[in-house]
Image (cartoon, rainbow, N blue to C red):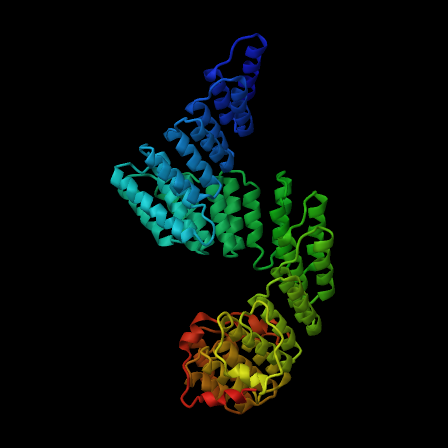
Amino acid sequence: GQAEVAVDLLREMQVFGVAANCVTYNAAISACHKAGKWDEAVALLKEMDVMGIPADVISYSACISACEKAGQWRSALTLLKQMEDLDIKPNLITFNAAISACGRGGEWERALKLYVNLKRADIRPDAVTYCALIAATSKAKKGSRSRAYMFAQGLLREMDDAGLEKNVEVYTAAIQAAASARKLDDIGLLFGEMKTRNVKPNAHTYAVAIAAQGLAKHPEIAVELFRYMQEVDKVEPNVVTYNAVIAAAAKAGQHKRAVRYLREMRKSGIAPNIVSYNSAISACKPSGRWRKAQRLFEEMTRNRLMPTLITYNTLVGTTIREGNLDRAKQWMENLRRDGLRPTHETYVNLLSVCKEKGLWREALDYFRQMESEWGIPSTTETYNALIAAYAKGRRPHKAAALLDEMRDRGIPLSTTTHHAYLRAHRYVGDWRAARRYILLLLHTTSPTYPPALPSSTGENPERTVLRRRLRPGTAAVARTAFHELLGAMAEAGRVEGMPRVMRWMRLRGFPPGTIAYNWCVRAREKREEWDGVLGVIEEMKARAVRMNAMTFRLGIIAAEKSGGWEKSLDLYREMQAAGYRMQFPDFGDASWGYGRELGMVEDAEDSALTRAAPGDDPAALADVF
């Protein structure tokens, strides 16, 4: 390339005794910059120093630009510091390149500091400066994105105050910053401003906006933007825009739409790349369409596209829903055959496959293999998957041993850890063990490492805990933990204690919702207490707790069994009015307990619709259990 030619000419000059100067070196450095060879550009700059040829601002600017192109922000800042030491004043091009380098590296705060230095040097920023700064804010890490976006908005106002024209690149960077901060309404405002100022969006602008809607799981809006781009703004889609709309469909699990756009892409003469296929395959994951994913994989390989680690991780993930471990093993073998190393995500997916079928032995083998063979450290997520496998396999004692191991190794317990462990006791109906563990959670100052419950106090430790206010961090765990306790009591037929547990929940500020009441309905249905089922439903109505498909179904059955056909018909009409249909789930399947449609996953509105009944006495706390 041009860089090799330039360096070769420089070497020939030295061989023939022609003295090289700053201009010739600058030309060679610029050639390396354009070729993306930042290391060679820096090497030539060092060679100038060795040869006694003083570098100038052009030399350093070209080197910093080369570093910016390669994303080497540390090297760019080092060169900028050298300029300061050598008393070489950077110009606007130098600062723009350094700002852009920091932005590419996700160092948006360093980019803003450079902007401050630029203004102190009495250098007037231009549109390129502002574009680089705004683009830098879009690369902010999670936790600082909102603050970074506030700076981006301030920079846009500064451009207006300075009378600088915002071009399509500036608006695209601003849309990217808004997308990063999840400010979707602002994206629409920016598009409106572009239209007002006659700035036409390009394919990259639309790709960023479509991707933002995809991440927010708004596939319909993403599709509408894609259509508007072509029909109204007459912007031809490219591989990036197609990938964005396919990814939006994938995020929402719309495998048919994702494949349709993949086909449309090929028909329009745009060859799908590995990103296109990876997104289409990932669309098959939520619904477990592993056969469709396999066909896409075969099509991809026929098109001579090499699968990546993302491809295989996604393919393993498509087998989770039906727990197809044989297929997951096959993808794992293909991954290793292609010379790829499995990652943490690979093993999380494998453990999740085992979890679905309760294959705890296989899950344990993979868990140990992950560390011993590949050196991948165990995390809370991998422990959670193994505990869930033990739970599904009805091995609560092994789940308990894993909790001890997590504490010994200093691995934090998450909300999911607690729920998976409690679920192990729920599956076997061990409500006493679930109760003891909840007491531990309520006793600790942090649910991350619950200690052993002290028993040396003068009074019953359980009553001591129940009288105490919930400590920070435990309330979020407690609500679902009590759902698991109610589930365990339902499986064990422990109907008598369930109202007292629910009263305690109400008194502690998280009144029972649909899930809690459904467990009470389930307990009475299991004991064929049909009047009891109807009584719970009446209480739900009195407390304005929303009923769902499961509640209605069991109520209709209970009314029919107790001879109340009129009540059964009334419940059926109420169910239709609520938008539900009759469903007949398998009670042996865990999805009964946690399927959103069946009502065992907490909806945000449950708490808002639930109100405390009169007559709840705080003195009843001591009698909860």
